[in-house]
Image 1: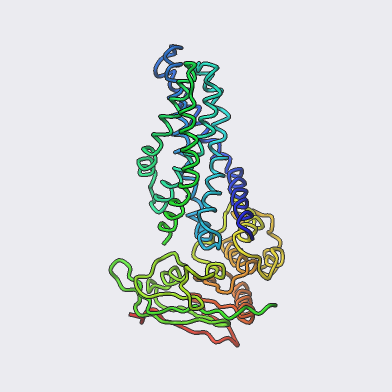
Image 2: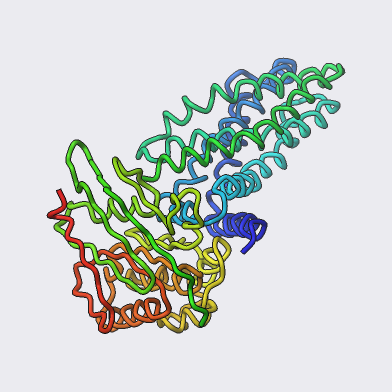
Amino acid sequence: MSLTTAFFAVIQRDLILAFRRRTEIANPVFFFILVVTLFPLGVGADPNLLQAIAPGIIWVSALLAVMLSLDSLFRSDFDDGSLEQMLLSSHPLTVLVFAKIVAHWLVTGLPLLLVAPLLAVFLGLPEQALGTLLITLVLATPVLSLIGSIGVSLTIGLRRGGMILSLLVLPLYIPVLIFASNAVEMAGNGLAVDPQINILIAIFFMSMVLAPLPAAAAIKMSIT
Amino acid sequence: MELITEKMLEVKNLSCIRDDRVLFKGLNFCIRNGQVLLLEGKNGSGKTSLLRIICGFRVQDEGELRWCNTALKDSEYFAQMAYVGHLDGVKKELTVIENLKMSLALSQAGRYSITQALKKVKLAAYDNSLVQSLSAGQKRRLSLARLLITKKSLWVLDEPFTSIDKEGIKLIESLMHEHIAQGGMIILTSHHDLNLTETKVQKINLSICH
């Protein structure tokens, strides 16, 4: 079958799998909601303070939620041998890995996108920043899945790779965090955010082109 | 059935070292259309390691593999080769049909349709059940059904008879026979005595390949 068919077949398969393991989709979203709600309890319900730290809270929580879900990207396929079969396919592994990343974003990034505006209102983020928050999430959550895929594929051969995974991946998330939360903050103050958005667009395209390659290479290394 | 064009897998001077232990050294063999290669040897003699080198998962420590006189990487080898290993490579949350459709999407359609293949391996009644409700032997049959729906000339089978009943063993032997008769090739490891009449089986004992 053609490469396009294979690409969409992988996405479809992963979406069916996610639907059959519904708790796995729900977990990152609930984690995200829960972490965001913890902050007002911890720092006090001062509206000015919450408003000031809202972009940071939302972005750090989103980042952690995506990171928690990363392990599911290749783990089950590695354990039951499906990844071996993908490796043996005559299609380039890079494209199949990219399909898996797209499916991962649809299952974890997209739900975050849907609940984030609610949480923003909950933290008292100014209305004019909501649009920017959504734009940064649209641009940057795929980047989190893409960069994360490199880390997961490197640690997939390790039984307990969770801690190393976060050490590998979190530093790489820093640029996304800086530009995304800064954009939301500036938008809240009514300032222009074009530079940040442009940089996020650049990061988005760059990681889309560059991340699947090392991820596929690392998978080939992990399967021996 | 179309005749598969002349193919050949050649292994030259292959060595595999694992944790400072030489599993095998200076291994040479060649397998052509219509041939079966049975790997024998004690547990830990490197049968699975050899199969995984043939699949390209492991890198050999010495020697080379050639497909139709070209290096594996530059040839269409991976479009021609199918592997059934210790792991079934099927997803337990998917139905039997969904699993086979996925395998089909990853390679080229072969001589049987999904329905025909399921009939062949006696899983026709289970087409819409989730794989997690199947028994170990049925899962094994499912992963062997994958070989039938895709168009591959070389089958690499690691212990294909594990957890399969007597009747199933006969069935798989007849499928293997059919594949060989049509010009396919099979490399396999098995502790079960292979009963392939009319086919000459090459045997390599890895326990003595040092």
